[in-house]
Amino acid sequence: MKVAHLITRLIVGGAQENTLLTVIGQQQAHGDTVALISGPGLGPEGSLEDRARAAGVDLRIVPELQRSLHPWRDWRSYRRLVRLLREDPPEIVHTHSSKAGILGRLAARRLGLPCVHTIHGASFHYGQSRLAYRAYVAAEQLAARWTDRFISVADDMTAEYVRAGIAPPERFVTIYSGFDVEPFLHPPRTADDVRAELGLVPEHVVVGKVARLFHLKGHEFLLAAAPRVAAACPQVRFLLVGDGVLRKSIEEEIQRLGLADRFIFTGLVAPERIPELIAAMDIVVHTSQWEGLARVLPQALIAGKPVVAYDVGGAREVVLPGETGILLPRDSVGELAEALVVLARNAELRERYGRRGRELFTEQFRHQTMTRRIREVYQEVLASRSTRG
Image (cartoon, rainbow, N blue to C red):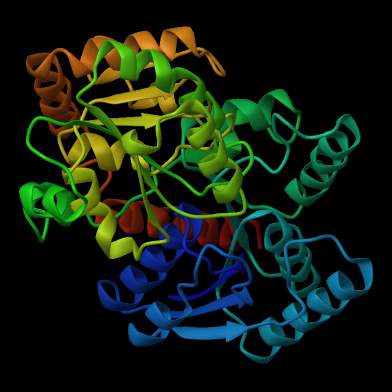
């Protein structure tokens, strides 16, 4: 099978890692001919471009394809995508992310190519202005006409798109965003070694958050809850994994709260380090204000860690109250502090939640499962096109 994947930028992030693993899996496990077309990896998050090239991926960079709206540059991106797909036409086009999702589907339509689009997170979401929200909904409604099938990373994404009138439910299929589960089952380094490296001692209960230090990731709610948690559980330490534009303001707020000795920043780390850092945590907290299905949630559960998360996106599909973790209303602070204190004081409960998460989700989130199911969708789309043709 010959496939072209299109994504706006190949930064270090869940959607990008999902896409890269899909490309590598299609090439190596199924013998497909796959091209990965991306804009440049601009931004402070880090790039996956070197990793893609090292894996032998046919990576093609479109310099004009960038995240911000820019009519002239976007028009040039569209023209470049049409040219690339015309010069080396795939059997199917698979688009990812908002900008590449719109322009890529338009290019596929221009050339009469079948197209599948993955919804990693809705382009219209909480926190946008009303005008931006409506504009993105209108754009997705238009692009839906050029989409043979939608793949959602969570059932919640399908529900959101159906509510917005973008397409009927029968045009969607949920395929959870897979990853390499083995490092989370068997980390390359022991938790004790990693904790010692971070200045942690066995008595510490580590509450970890893995997310860019960026708007809508919800660090402010964790900071607001931290004084209550620290007062109730002096042994708690907070481990923030990631970097971003809000780092300085977050550090200043921690200083203002008098909690500088309770927080540890790792800065930007390679994706390969995430399993060992999660292994060093006792509780994983996720307070984003919007997500598709944050990869850190199943990663934490497969690593055997309990999760405290806001009820946004697909979180409820893996954070099962009383079974794998604690699910809270978005932006809550008092409930967040209480949940962290309950888990910090109860090692048996932490172990039970983590064990159950590992049992439920290990097989479901293997990237091999994801790749196989995506190829099944391709085959259905191609068979449907053949029948109609």
